[in-house]
Every structure is written in C-alpha cells, then in structure tokens.
Amino acid sequence: LPGATTPGGSRQATLGVLGGGQLGRMFVHAAQALGYRCVVLDPDAISPAGAVAEQHVRADYLDSFGLAQLARDCDAITTEFENVPAVALETLAGMRTVAPAAAAVAVCQDRAVEKAHFEAAGAQSGVYPAPHAVITNDIELAAVDPALLPGILKTSRMGYDGKGQVRVNTQAELAAAWDGLKRVPCVLEQLLPLKRELSVLLARGADGQIVSYPVQQNLHRGGILAVTQVPAPDVPVAVQQQAVAAARQVAEALAYVGVLCIEFFWLADGRLVVNEMAPRPHNSGHWTMNGCNASQFELQVRALAGLPLPELRQHSPSVMLNLLGDLWFSADGGPTPPPWDRVLALPGTHLHLYGKAEARHGRKMGHLNITADTAEAARDVARQAAAILG
Ligand code: ADP
Ligand code: MG
Image 1 (cartoon, protein in one colour):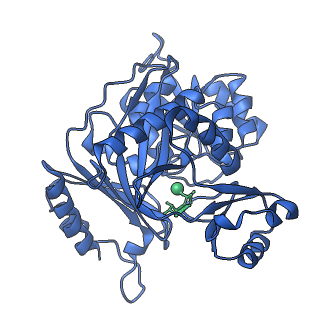
Image 2 (cartoon, helix red, strand yellow):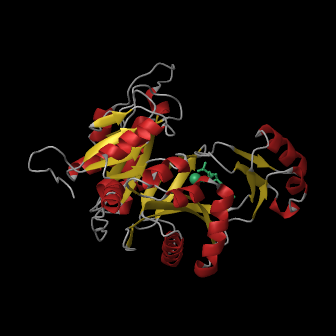
Image 3 (cartoon, helix red, strand yellow):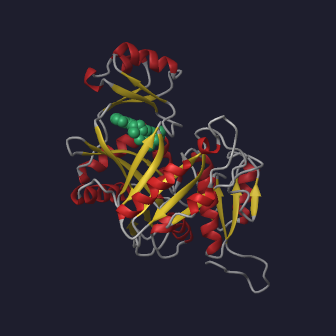
C-alpha cells in the first residue's frame, strides 16, 4: 500500500519500471505522488525516468543480476515499453507481481500475433483488423493476394512511429521492399482510406474491473503522433461506442492487467478497423494529465499496486500537441529552446518536458496540453500555440 513505511522507517512500498523513457518518468511522478518509491531499470546511464526515480539500476533487460536486484527492491513491477524481452517479464513474474503479464506483452510485440488476436476478438465486437497477409518466406511472398495492393509492408516486430514500414504498389515493389527489410517476418496490410485515426485508452484491474477514457482523435505527421483531441470532434457517438466496446473486448480476451491503448482507423466508408495496441500508457493519452480527474499514469500505478481504479471523468475538453526536437532548431539550424514564455501566456496551457538533454529531429521532447471550457476554445488556443512554436 502507498506510503507503507514500516515503523522503523526501514522500508517504503516500492514500484519498479523496466525502461527509462518519458513514459517511465511520468509513471514515476504519479507513483511518487501516491507515496511509492520507484526503481527504474535501464541500460543507459542517463534516462528521463532514471533521473527522477529514487533508484536507477543500470543494467540490460536480460541481465540476471539487474533483474534480481529489481525483484529484491520492488513489491511490484511494470514496463514502459512493449519491446522489453518477454523473458525478462517472465523471470520477474516468478518473484514479484508483474503487470502487464509477459503473455499479453508478447501479443503486442508481434503484429502477426496481434492481428490474430484482433481477428478472434472481432467475432465478439464486429471490429476487425485491416485485410493482411503474413510474410515469412518466399512461398508466402508469392502467394500474396493482389487485392492487398497497394499496401503497407510492416516488420512484425520492433516497429514504432512509422519505422519499419514501406508502402508498396506492385508485387515487384513488395518483393524489393521485403529484401530491403532484410527479409525479416513482416505483415502486408491493405492501404485503407482513412477518414480519422482514433485510440481508446483503458485500464483493467486484477479483479477484472475496466475503466476507459473517452475516444481520442489522433493526427499523425510523418508516422509520429502530432495532435490528440478529446472529445473526438469528427466522430459520431455510435462509432465511438463501438470503439470502446471493441477495446474492452480485446482487454478481456487478454485477461489484461494495467493500462492498454488500442488504435483504430475510421474509414471513409464509415467502418471501424482495429490497427494495433500498446501494453502501457500511450502518447495519445497524455491529455489525461490535465483534462481528467485521474491520469493514465495514475491508473497504471493503481492497477499495478492493486488499488481501486477511479471512475473516470473528463473535466475539460483537451488538445495535446507533441513537442518534437525539431522545435528546438531555428531557421538557421542552430539549437534554441522554443519561446515557452509566450506559449504559457496562453490560457489553459500545461507544459510537460521530459528532461532530455539533447534535442534531435523527430525526438519526443515533451508535450503541451491545452484545456478549455469548450472544445472549440481548446482548439483555438492550440492553433495559437502551434503558430508561436512555428
Ligand atoms: P506504428 O507502430 O509505427 O505506430 P502503425 O501500424 O500504427 O505503426 O502505422 C503508423 C501510421 O501509418 C498509422 O498511424 C497510419 O497513419 C498509417 N497506416 C498504418 N497502417 C495503415 C493502413 N493499413 N492503411 C492506411 N494507413 C495506415
Ligand atoms: Mg501506431
């Protein structure tokens, strides 16, 4: 339990995180607010989460000494990124409470397995993944249904922010693209006419209780999330309800524990398609830090620690702008911090920076949440902030 300091003051309840990125950092902040100590395991000497945790175990995710130290010092352990080796979670699960479970994370790590899970859940929810084919050898490559072209070839593992993806129009381009991806296992997806991109963020407790946030409408630029708006301005309520029901179905079917985010495509013809999921707090849920009674990071802490999940209430229409490293470079290419004084002078702006020393193009440096009394007012301030940031 939080703040469970023993009478001698010798030990306080402690939560562990695999991974030291910004998601880990915001998890640590939420855990500390609830009275927990935190230990972060990350191989890098300097990391956004390691810098704010009480303890940083600097070790590889497969280092048995590092994992043993984490297990020794923590009561419960989570992960902040989905590509943590599943065997690391399994090892820890033998010693401590771990959420989400290795088996659920393993499904999210492999697009082919993930899509099979979505197909199965679709029988209940009626929401299916994009038409696709798994490509692991020349026979499967040759057998690809031409109806899947034009399509997007995606590596089954380790893809994120649009990395490991190639658009292909013909069989010849497909073969060349697969060579270019070093012939690793891939999924070819039909290129769909997207009207909007959505995500549903939920948390499920060990007791099976699920709480979910309102549907999030996301805009990507160059494969990276740029803007999230909640409520989703363009999406009919019936479609939103369908997305939430489908997301809950997926979480149930995984017996999932923790925060889970599921991405959807809303197509030009009105259909809803499930795209992918992340077994952790998600960039598209950062608005919850200022627009809701409880943030996604607090939910992750509560789910991990076995605390009750709160009934969720969005108190303010919200817009989130991602702040990429590009904003730190002026027109002449020199690094300069953005004019935060002007941004923060706008009403309802909440700045979150991740403590990364070096700005790089495409690197996630922080995000700006904008809250207002109406969605239109939030959008208006977001436009002004974007104009100032350039
Ligand atoms: P990542 O793991 O990189 O986020 P996604 O599968 O979410 O991979 O793809 C990144 C982006 O590419 C999506 O947000 C969407 O904009 C676009 N995209 C992905 N798959 C399709 C598809 N089948 N049809 C059209 N656009 C797609
Ligand atoms: Mg995605």
